[in-house]
Image (tube, rainbow, N blue to C red; front, side, top):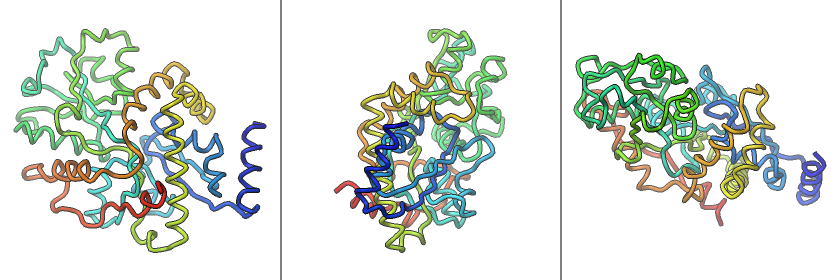
Length: 324
């Protein structure tokens, strides 16, 4: 506590004791190492040093970041690009201002005993899929494989944010993240050798995850732009600190978990996996990664996620200044 107070006092002196600018960040999910960079930036005084007072709002199964920002409940939100671009096409003018995650952590985890050894084996199987915007990469993948998801080729089970359908053998495969649900399967007593995993990244159908999004009209305000430049700069400093010191970052996350639901072992393991996904990113969106995501979302056959190439859906306006 003394260290945090010292950092805050130093920041106040450095900014001429001016009142800090408020920023509200809406997470895509609950407090966990998936968002460690922001908690580290807060705990280490990186936001204070930029003259910011950042409020981090946890998400959850009933929280949609797009709805929160549309209602004015946050200045910036974390979302996956498929849902952000789908929302933009429907009229919510979201803009990606930074992309801390370089790689995707999404995959399908299957029981080997189900007979799934390759994507071709999905036909005739029940597959667990997350919805609420998370289904878009899956639907694109199935289309690429030529598999219909109406029950003709595969049966889609609307999966909760757990792995029960796999454990109860209601589905041959379920959606998992490399840093979270996969380990829930392992912790439930299933041996890794009894599983087959298919990473979206390896299958060439990965889309960008955990980007930072703001409303387009806000970017025309110089004061808001300046605030976001400082926010992104401090956040990326937090992410690189978290990558370099994963165990410390996990403990900081635990200190911010008001629910008490997270455990030290799980968060340290998660942070180790998250560091692999943020590695290689300085926060600036890679245009090739963006185009790959757009191409994937538009290749949904008769039911694409987006029907036309987006315009103005991302900008380097913030990162160009933040990373100087």
